[in-house]
Length: 376
Image (tube, rainbow, N blue to C red):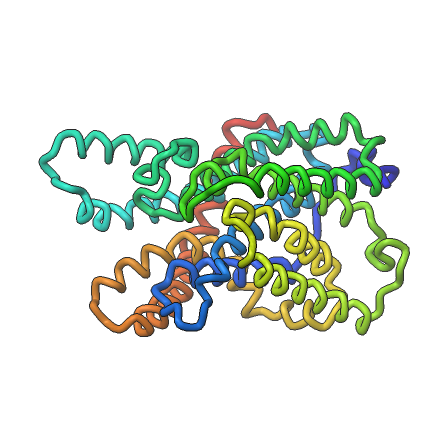
Protein backbone atom coordinates (compact mmCIF):
# COMPACT_ATOMS: atom_id res chain seq x y z
CA UNK A 1 0.00 0.00 0.00
CA UNK A 2 1.12 3.58 -0.58
CA UNK A 3 2.76 3.21 -4.00
CA UNK A 4 -0.35 4.23 -5.95
CA UNK A 5 -2.32 6.60 -3.75
CA UNK A 6 -0.33 8.08 -0.91
CA UNK A 7 2.65 8.93 -3.07
CA UNK A 8 0.46 10.31 -5.85
CA UNK A 9 -0.41 13.97 -6.25
CA UNK A 10 -2.44 13.49 -9.43
CA UNK A 11 -5.71 15.42 -9.31
CA UNK A 12 -8.78 13.63 -10.60
CA UNK A 13 -12.47 13.74 -9.83
CA UNK A 14 -13.75 11.07 -7.44
CA UNK A 15 -16.67 8.97 -8.66
CA UNK A 16 -19.83 8.97 -6.57
CA UNK A 17 -20.49 6.03 -4.26
CA UNK A 18 -24.28 5.84 -4.34
CA UNK A 19 -24.72 3.11 -1.72
CA UNK A 20 -23.02 5.29 0.90
CA UNK A 21 -25.21 8.24 -0.12
CA UNK A 22 -28.30 6.11 0.54
CA UNK A 23 -26.92 4.99 3.89
CA UNK A 24 -26.75 8.64 4.94
CA UNK A 25 -30.54 8.83 4.90
CA UNK A 26 -30.82 5.62 6.93
CA UNK A 27 -28.42 7.09 9.50
CA UNK A 28 -30.48 10.30 9.63
CA UNK A 29 -33.64 8.21 10.13
CA UNK A 30 -31.96 6.45 13.06
CA UNK A 31 -31.34 9.83 14.68
CA UNK A 32 -35.01 10.67 14.07
CA UNK A 33 -36.08 7.59 16.06
CA UNK A 34 -34.06 8.88 19.01
CA UNK A 35 -35.67 12.32 19.02
CA UNK A 36 -39.22 11.26 18.13
CA UNK A 37 -41.60 10.52 21.04
CA UNK A 38 -41.81 6.80 20.24
CA UNK A 39 -43.31 4.81 23.15
CA UNK A 40 -40.56 2.67 24.67
CA UNK A 41 -42.64 -0.46 25.22
CA UNK A 42 -40.63 -2.32 22.58
CA UNK A 43 -37.23 -1.36 24.03
CA UNK A 44 -36.22 0.62 20.93
CA UNK A 45 -34.94 3.48 23.08
CA UNK A 46 -32.52 1.14 24.87
CA UNK A 47 -30.63 0.55 21.61
CA UNK A 48 -29.74 4.26 21.38
CA UNK A 49 -30.00 4.40 17.60
CA UNK A 50 -29.44 8.15 17.59
CA UNK A 51 -25.90 7.73 18.86
CA UNK A 52 -25.33 5.10 16.19
CA UNK A 53 -26.47 7.49 13.46
CA UNK A 54 -24.23 10.33 14.65
CA UNK A 55 -21.17 8.06 14.92
CA UNK A 56 -21.86 6.78 11.40
CA UNK A 57 -22.03 10.35 10.08
CA UNK A 58 -18.62 11.21 11.54
CA UNK A 59 -16.99 8.05 10.18
CA UNK A 60 -18.60 8.60 6.78
CA UNK A 61 -17.50 12.23 6.85
CA UNK A 62 -13.85 11.24 7.31
CA UNK A 63 -14.21 8.69 4.52
CA UNK A 64 -15.91 10.98 1.99
CA UNK A 65 -13.67 13.99 2.64
CA UNK A 66 -10.58 11.84 2.15
CA UNK A 67 -12.01 10.15 -0.93
CA UNK A 68 -13.01 13.44 -2.55
CA UNK A 69 -10.31 15.89 -1.45
CA UNK A 70 -7.15 13.93 -0.62
CA UNK A 71 -5.49 14.12 -4.04
CA UNK A 72 -6.42 17.78 -4.56
CA UNK A 73 -5.02 18.84 -1.21
CA UNK A 74 -1.69 16.99 -1.53
CA UNK A 75 -1.30 18.37 -5.06
CA UNK A 76 -1.57 21.92 -3.63
CA UNK A 77 -2.77 23.24 -6.96
CA UNK A 78 -5.27 26.01 -7.73
CA UNK A 79 -5.83 26.94 -4.09
CA UNK A 80 -7.06 23.45 -3.23
CA UNK A 81 -7.10 24.04 0.54
CA UNK A 82 -8.99 27.33 0.19
CA UNK A 83 -11.44 25.57 -2.14
CA UNK A 84 -11.92 22.85 0.46
CA UNK A 85 -12.81 25.33 3.21
CA UNK A 86 -15.09 27.31 0.90
CA UNK A 87 -16.94 24.16 -0.18
CA UNK A 88 -17.48 23.09 3.42
CA UNK A 89 -18.75 26.49 4.55
CA UNK A 90 -21.06 26.63 1.53
CA UNK A 91 -22.40 23.19 2.48
CA UNK A 92 -23.03 23.85 6.18
CA UNK A 93 -24.12 27.44 6.57
CA UNK A 94 -27.20 27.89 4.34
CA UNK A 95 -29.18 25.13 6.08
CA UNK A 96 -27.68 25.94 9.48
CA UNK A 97 -28.73 29.62 9.33
CA UNK A 98 -32.20 28.76 8.03
CA UNK A 99 -32.87 26.22 10.79
CA UNK A 100 -31.43 28.60 13.38
CA UNK A 101 -34.04 31.16 12.33
CA UNK A 102 -36.76 28.49 12.31
CA UNK A 103 -35.81 27.65 15.90
CA UNK A 104 -36.21 31.23 17.16
CA UNK A 105 -39.97 31.07 17.93
CA UNK A 106 -39.51 27.86 19.93
CA UNK A 107 -36.54 29.40 21.74
CA UNK A 108 -38.49 32.51 22.68
CA UNK A 109 -41.28 30.34 24.07
CA UNK A 110 -38.86 28.49 26.35
CA UNK A 111 -37.03 31.58 27.66
CA UNK A 112 -37.80 32.08 31.35
CA UNK A 113 -38.85 35.68 30.88
CA UNK A 114 -38.44 37.90 27.83
CA UNK A 115 -37.87 40.82 30.21
CA UNK A 116 -35.10 39.22 32.28
CA UNK A 117 -31.90 40.91 31.16
CA UNK A 118 -29.64 38.05 32.26
CA UNK A 119 -31.73 35.62 30.20
CA UNK A 120 -31.45 37.87 27.17
CA UNK A 121 -27.69 37.97 27.53
CA UNK A 122 -27.48 34.18 27.85
CA UNK A 123 -29.71 33.72 24.82
CA UNK A 124 -27.59 36.18 22.84
CA UNK A 125 -24.38 34.36 23.77
CA UNK A 126 -25.90 30.99 22.92
CA UNK A 127 -26.95 32.44 19.56
CA UNK A 128 -23.43 33.73 18.97
CA UNK A 129 -21.88 30.32 19.69
CA UNK A 130 -24.47 28.67 17.43
CA UNK A 131 -23.91 30.97 14.47
CA UNK A 132 -20.13 30.63 14.77
CA UNK A 133 -20.46 26.84 15.12
CA UNK A 134 -18.53 26.83 18.38
CA UNK A 135 -21.34 25.68 20.70
CA UNK A 136 -19.96 22.14 21.11
CA UNK A 137 -16.94 23.59 22.92
CA UNK A 138 -19.11 25.07 25.69
CA UNK A 139 -19.86 22.54 28.48
CA UNK A 140 -23.42 23.73 29.10
CA UNK A 141 -26.45 21.99 27.63
CA UNK A 142 -28.22 25.36 27.55
CA UNK A 143 -25.62 26.35 24.93
CA UNK A 144 -24.75 23.24 22.92
CA UNK A 145 -28.39 22.11 22.71
CA UNK A 146 -29.82 25.60 22.26
CA UNK A 147 -31.89 26.78 19.29
CA UNK A 148 -31.74 23.92 16.77
CA UNK A 149 -30.33 21.32 19.15
CA UNK A 150 -28.89 18.97 16.53
CA UNK A 151 -26.58 21.73 15.28
CA UNK A 152 -24.08 20.81 18.01
CA UNK A 153 -22.96 17.96 15.74
CA UNK A 154 -22.07 20.27 12.84
CA UNK A 155 -20.11 22.37 15.34
CA UNK A 156 -18.02 19.22 15.84
CA UNK A 157 -17.96 18.69 12.09
CA UNK A 158 -16.63 22.22 11.57
CA UNK A 159 -13.73 21.35 13.87
CA UNK A 160 -13.01 18.27 11.74
CA UNK A 161 -13.07 20.44 8.61
CA UNK A 162 -10.55 22.80 10.19
CA UNK A 163 -8.18 19.92 10.95
CA UNK A 164 -8.68 17.89 7.80
CA UNK A 165 -6.11 19.51 5.46
CA UNK A 166 -3.50 19.31 8.23
CA UNK A 167 -4.24 15.61 8.78
CA UNK A 168 -4.02 14.93 5.04
CA UNK A 169 -0.69 16.72 4.68
CA UNK A 170 0.73 14.84 7.67
CA UNK A 171 -0.38 11.54 6.13
CA UNK A 172 1.21 12.51 2.82
CA UNK A 173 4.41 13.63 4.56
CA UNK A 174 4.77 10.18 6.18
CA UNK A 175 3.05 8.27 3.37
CA UNK A 176 5.65 5.49 3.24
CA UNK A 177 4.66 4.44 6.75
CA UNK A 178 0.98 4.17 5.90
CA UNK A 179 1.02 0.54 4.82
CA UNK A 180 -2.14 -1.54 5.11
CA UNK A 181 -0.73 -3.30 8.17
CA UNK A 182 0.18 -0.04 9.90
CA UNK A 183 -3.22 1.50 9.18
CA UNK A 184 -5.02 -1.53 10.62
CA UNK A 185 -2.72 -1.46 13.66
CA UNK A 186 -3.41 2.25 14.13
CA UNK A 187 -7.17 1.71 13.92
CA UNK A 188 -7.06 -1.22 16.36
CA UNK A 189 -4.76 0.59 18.76
CA UNK A 190 -6.88 3.75 18.75
CA UNK A 191 -10.06 1.77 19.43
CA UNK A 192 -8.49 -0.27 22.23
CA UNK A 193 -6.98 2.83 23.86
CA UNK A 194 -10.36 4.59 23.80
CA UNK A 195 -12.06 1.51 25.27
CA UNK A 196 -9.50 1.28 28.08
CA UNK A 197 -9.86 4.98 28.88
CA UNK A 198 -13.66 5.10 28.68
CA UNK A 199 -14.77 1.80 30.25
CA UNK A 200 -14.13 2.89 33.87
CA UNK A 201 -15.80 6.28 33.41
CA UNK A 202 -19.18 7.16 34.87
CA UNK A 203 -21.24 9.16 32.39
CA UNK A 204 -24.78 10.32 31.92
CA UNK A 205 -27.03 10.38 28.90
CA UNK A 206 -26.15 13.99 28.06
CA UNK A 207 -22.54 13.92 29.12
CA UNK A 208 -20.58 16.65 27.36
CA UNK A 209 -17.15 15.13 27.87
CA UNK A 210 -17.84 11.78 26.22
CA UNK A 211 -20.39 12.70 23.56
CA UNK A 212 -20.43 16.39 22.64
CA UNK A 213 -16.83 17.54 23.14
CA UNK A 214 -15.22 17.72 19.65
CA UNK A 215 -11.94 16.07 20.71
CA UNK A 216 -13.91 13.09 22.06
CA UNK A 217 -15.39 12.54 18.58
CA UNK A 218 -12.09 12.79 16.72
CA UNK A 219 -11.50 8.98 16.75
CA UNK A 220 -14.72 8.51 14.74
CA UNK A 221 -13.49 10.92 12.09
CA UNK A 222 -9.97 9.45 11.99
CA UNK A 223 -11.42 5.96 11.53
CA UNK A 224 -13.25 7.21 8.46
CA UNK A 225 -10.04 8.68 7.06
CA UNK A 226 -8.18 5.39 7.57
CA UNK A 227 -10.98 3.41 5.92
CA UNK A 228 -10.83 5.76 2.92
CA UNK A 229 -7.08 5.22 2.59
CA UNK A 230 -7.64 1.47 2.54
CA UNK A 231 -10.41 1.77 -0.03
CA UNK A 232 -8.62 4.22 -2.32
CA UNK A 233 -5.47 2.13 -2.46
CA UNK A 234 -7.25 -1.17 -3.06
CA UNK A 235 -8.05 -2.93 -6.29
CA UNK A 236 -11.77 -2.29 -6.78
CA UNK A 237 -12.19 -5.49 -8.77
CA UNK A 238 -10.22 -7.61 -6.28
CA UNK A 239 -10.37 -6.02 -2.80
CA UNK A 240 -7.48 -7.33 -0.67
CA UNK A 241 -6.50 -9.58 -3.57
CA UNK A 242 -9.80 -11.48 -3.46
CA UNK A 243 -12.14 -11.50 -6.44
CA UNK A 244 -15.58 -10.97 -4.94
CA UNK A 245 -18.54 -12.14 -6.96
CA UNK A 246 -22.06 -10.90 -6.27
CA UNK A 247 -22.83 -13.84 -3.94
CA UNK A 248 -19.73 -13.47 -1.80
CA UNK A 249 -20.04 -9.67 -1.72
CA UNK A 250 -23.67 -9.98 -0.62
CA UNK A 251 -22.67 -12.33 2.19
CA UNK A 252 -20.06 -9.81 3.38
CA UNK A 253 -22.56 -6.93 3.18
CA UNK A 254 -25.16 -8.86 5.19
CA UNK A 255 -22.47 -9.90 7.67
CA UNK A 256 -21.49 -6.25 8.21
CA UNK A 257 -25.12 -5.38 8.99
CA UNK A 258 -25.45 -8.35 11.35
CA UNK A 259 -22.24 -7.20 13.07
CA UNK A 260 -23.76 -3.76 13.70
CA UNK A 261 -27.03 -5.18 15.00
CA UNK A 262 -25.18 -7.62 17.28
CA UNK A 263 -23.04 -4.79 18.57
CA UNK A 264 -26.15 -2.76 19.40
CA UNK A 265 -27.60 -5.52 21.57
CA UNK A 266 -24.27 -6.33 23.22
CA UNK A 267 -23.83 -2.62 23.80
CA UNK A 268 -26.82 -2.57 26.16
CA UNK A 269 -24.52 -4.37 28.63
CA UNK A 270 -21.78 -1.74 28.26
CA UNK A 271 -21.23 1.48 30.26
CA UNK A 272 -22.74 4.57 28.71
CA UNK A 273 -19.28 6.10 28.28
CA UNK A 274 -18.43 3.65 25.46
CA UNK A 275 -21.95 3.41 24.04
CA UNK A 276 -21.90 7.07 23.04
CA UNK A 277 -19.68 6.17 20.11
CA UNK A 278 -16.49 4.17 20.39
CA UNK A 279 -18.06 0.74 20.99
CA UNK A 280 -19.73 0.76 17.56
CA UNK A 281 -16.96 2.47 15.59
CA UNK A 282 -15.23 -0.70 14.26
CA UNK A 283 -18.46 -2.26 12.96
CA UNK A 284 -19.61 1.03 11.42
CA UNK A 285 -16.22 1.53 9.78
CA UNK A 286 -16.50 -1.99 8.37
CA UNK A 287 -19.94 -1.16 6.94
CA UNK A 288 -18.54 1.94 5.22
CA UNK A 289 -15.67 -0.06 3.71
CA UNK A 290 -17.85 -2.97 2.58
CA UNK A 291 -20.51 -0.82 0.94
CA UNK A 292 -17.97 1.46 -0.72
CA UNK A 293 -17.18 -1.40 -3.14
CA UNK A 294 -20.88 -1.69 -4.17
CA UNK A 295 -20.57 -5.30 -5.26
CA UNK A 296 -23.39 -7.08 -3.43
CA UNK A 297 -27.17 -7.27 -3.77
CA UNK A 298 -27.72 -5.03 -0.74
CA UNK A 299 -25.67 -2.32 -2.46
CA UNK A 300 -27.80 -2.75 -5.56
CA UNK A 301 -30.93 -2.23 -3.44
CA UNK A 302 -29.39 0.94 -2.03
CA UNK A 303 -28.48 2.19 -5.50
CA UNK A 304 -31.97 3.29 -6.46
CA UNK A 305 -32.99 6.84 -7.31
CA UNK A 306 -35.34 7.41 -4.40
CA UNK A 307 -32.87 6.37 -1.71
CA UNK A 308 -30.03 8.22 -3.40
CA UNK A 309 -32.10 11.42 -3.51
CA UNK A 310 -33.09 11.00 0.14
CA UNK A 311 -29.44 10.49 0.95
CA UNK A 312 -28.51 13.68 -0.87
CA UNK A 313 -31.18 15.52 1.10
CA UNK A 314 -30.20 13.82 4.38
CA UNK A 315 -28.32 16.85 5.72
CA UNK A 316 -31.46 18.95 5.41
CA UNK A 317 -33.49 16.08 6.93
CA UNK A 318 -31.09 15.85 9.86
CA UNK A 319 -31.16 19.60 10.44
CA UNK A 320 -34.95 20.05 10.26
CA UNK A 321 -36.30 16.86 11.86
CA UNK A 322 -36.04 17.85 15.51
CA UNK A 323 -37.59 21.25 14.83
CA UNK A 324 -40.44 19.59 12.95
CA UNK A 325 -41.01 17.24 15.89
CA UNK A 326 -41.07 20.15 18.34
CA UNK A 327 -43.55 22.09 16.23
CA UNK A 328 -45.81 19.07 15.63
CA UNK A 329 -45.86 18.40 19.39
CA UNK A 330 -47.64 21.75 19.76
CA UNK A 331 -50.65 20.22 17.95
CA UNK A 332 -51.47 18.00 20.92
CA UNK A 333 -52.03 14.84 18.87
CA UNK A 334 -51.14 11.27 19.90
CA UNK A 335 -47.49 10.20 20.16
CA UNK A 336 -47.72 7.92 17.14
CA UNK A 337 -49.44 10.73 15.25
CA UNK A 338 -46.53 13.01 16.10
CA UNK A 339 -44.02 10.37 14.95
CA UNK A 340 -45.72 9.66 11.63
CA UNK A 341 -46.55 13.28 10.78
CA UNK A 342 -43.07 14.48 11.80
CA UNK A 343 -41.32 11.87 9.68
CA UNK A 344 -43.42 12.61 6.61
CA UNK A 345 -43.06 16.38 7.03
CA UNK A 346 -39.31 16.12 7.67
CA UNK A 347 -38.86 14.03 4.54
CA UNK A 348 -40.96 16.30 2.33
CA UNK A 349 -39.52 19.54 3.73
CA UNK A 350 -35.93 18.32 3.43
CA UNK A 351 -36.51 17.23 -0.17
CA UNK A 352 -37.84 20.67 -1.11
CA UNK A 353 -35.07 22.39 0.84
CA UNK A 354 -32.42 20.38 -0.91
CA UNK A 355 -33.77 21.13 -4.40
CA UNK A 356 -34.75 24.79 -4.07
CA UNK A 357 -32.47 26.06 -1.29
CA UNK A 358 -29.58 23.93 -0.01
CA UNK A 359 -27.99 22.82 -3.28
CA UNK A 360 -28.57 25.99 -5.35
CA UNK A 361 -27.26 28.22 -2.56
CA UNK A 362 -24.28 25.93 -1.95
CA UNK A 363 -23.26 26.21 -5.59
CA UNK A 364 -23.75 29.98 -5.66
CA UNK A 365 -21.79 30.61 -2.46
CA UNK A 366 -19.02 28.29 -3.59
CA UNK A 367 -18.70 30.07 -6.94
CA UNK A 368 -18.96 33.52 -5.31
CA UNK A 369 -16.17 32.96 -2.78
CA UNK A 370 -13.93 31.08 -5.18
CA UNK A 371 -14.07 33.99 -7.64
CA UNK A 372 -13.07 36.46 -4.94
CA UNK A 373 -10.66 34.50 -2.76
CA UNK A 374 -8.81 32.30 -5.23
CA UNK A 375 -6.66 33.54 -8.08
CA UNK A 376 -7.76 31.73 -11.20
